[in-house]
Length: 303
Image 1 (tube, rainbow, N blue to C red):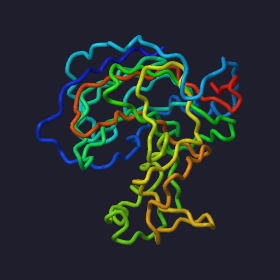
Image 2 (image 1 turned 90 degrees about the horizontal axis):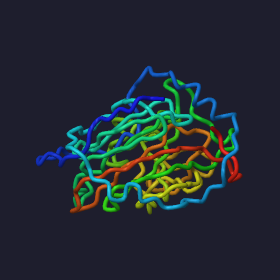
Image 3 (image 1 turned 45 degrees about the horizontal axis):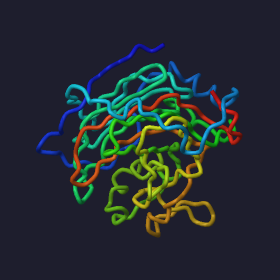
C-alpha cells in the first residue's frame, strides 16, 4: 500500500492574481514507468463486480460537514508530477492550475483528495481552477485502448466537503500527429496555434463529461458511473474540425469540433478539476476513491 502523503490544505490566493491561460491538460515529463504494467493490464483482464448505477448510486454523508484544515499555499501552474494512487491503469499523477487557485493533494492506495482555495473566476473567466490528472498513457508509450478492452465507462466514489465548488470530470486522448502538420492561420483562436501547435492537439484539450454543458459533480455520492459516450469537446476547444473525409481542417470555425466524442481507443488521462465561479472564491475539498473501469455489461469491470 502506498503510504499516505498528506501535503496540505487550503488558503486564499494572492491578492495580485497572475493572469492565467487555459490548462495544458498534459502531465510534466517523467521517467516514472513503475506502473506502466498496470495500464497495460487494463487492456485484457476481467473481474466480477456488483452492478453499478449510471452517474448515481447511494449518497454518502461521510464528508458533508468535513472541516477544511490548515492553510494550503501550493499554487500549481505548470504540470507538477506527484505520487500516484494505486488506481487501476494509472501510471502517474500530476497537479496543475491557473496560478491563483491553491491545491494540496493527499494520496492513499485507493483514494486521492484535493483541497485548497478556489479563485474567483471573474466575469471574464480568467481563472479556470486547478486539477488532479491521472495519466493513463505511459511516458513515451501508446495510449490506453479502452475499446479493445471492452471498457465503456469509468466508475468511482466521490466525496465533497461543500457543494459551493463543483468538480468537473475530463478525459484526454493522445495527440494526433496530423495536427502537427497543419498550418494554422494567424486568426485561428487568436493565433495561439500558430506559435504552439501542441496547444491545439488533443492532450491539451480535454473532453468534458457533458461537453459545453458540463455535468459537474456536486454532491457526495458512492457508485458514480460515467459513460465515455458523454465525454465531448466543449465549444471553447482549440482542436480543429474533422471534415467528411476524416481530415482535419482549419478553414472553418474551431467550434466545428464541438461535441466530438472522445476516442476511447486513444485515452491519455483522466482529470478532476475544481471549477471556480464568478464572485464566489472560497475553500474546497474533494476525494475520489475506488476508481474502476467498467465494461458495457454492468456486472463486469476491467481491473
